[in-house]
Length: 490
Image (cartoon, rainbow, N blue to C red; front, side):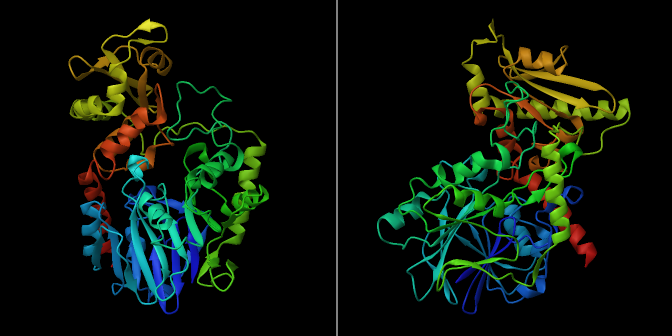
């Protein structure tokens, strides 16, 4: 049995005549919103014809770096398509509309596909809620269940899987595949969940150079209660580039570099970092295997990106938020019309925000920055850089309504309100009306500040309220648009 790395978090597991494809991203880029499709890193091409006989396609969850309509359209409709029970309905309907026969699994009973046996597991309940719908998969040889591969992308390892191993129902996997979604962060680059209100210019390097902090978490604390120390851990994830504003080639993770670093740290586990097209075989001796010829890394472009990264860090440049992801408004009348829509949206979300952890946290606060708090404690600031406009609205916790504020400068808002967010007006409207996904703007054009932990701020609220599970109707709108464009191309 072997696992072929196709890029980012896409894997093909093969044994005998059986082929299982996980989270297929086969195009050079991905994304549900065409104008914001994101480049795969390292740049590579995939000859989808080589997958014409794949037996099963497994989708772990519906985030756009796993669920890509254009990639799915390249695959054979004869393949069995499997999703977990937590996948939202618009995604399941899209898969059916593409012509696949869909199977939904909600237990860990083995599923036999040719020469392979699959078991599906729920993510650990402690997983961040926006990744909690991930379904994980264990794959082993059907006739020889002494070892296998466990794929745990984007979520904490399943407690059910660990119990199965600890209690002898499942042999420990020889290979565990985990997500390393750290950025290769240049100086000054804030992450989507970082606190703009507290971090000084030199205090925001939470992952350190080349993502070492996240690497440590993935390899040590992430696996510290695994019943048996895995023989091999393969890193994936972070395999994309957002070229917006000063972000240059960030974020991405260079897994071969990180795996070499991890192995020099004398861990008991062999850390595997593959380039697209490389494979890891379990038999007869576990280890990397030759490059697959139907996946080709653009070596010239890859080397240029690495050189660009080195130059960027060597120069000590900083990265600021971009003016906006969507084109900014250019006249006052258009801005005012968008602002009216934003005001209406704020009143719709007010009660949900008060019930969310952000609202509950701020309700028990009495003081902020040495002064007694009034009823207004959460603020939204909408910006148009093209027009030089900033308009702020604070949530009154007594009336449950957002109210326009006279203080609009970001520094003043951070001083007055313990919880807040500043983002381009056009991006807020795009997110709230289904023309953008929240993932398209976080860590790019949004600044937020908050008290307490990273899950207490407004970005996690956005993940919940505008994410796939909280607002499936927005996802359905984006999917319908993508399907219409796909039909026009046929």
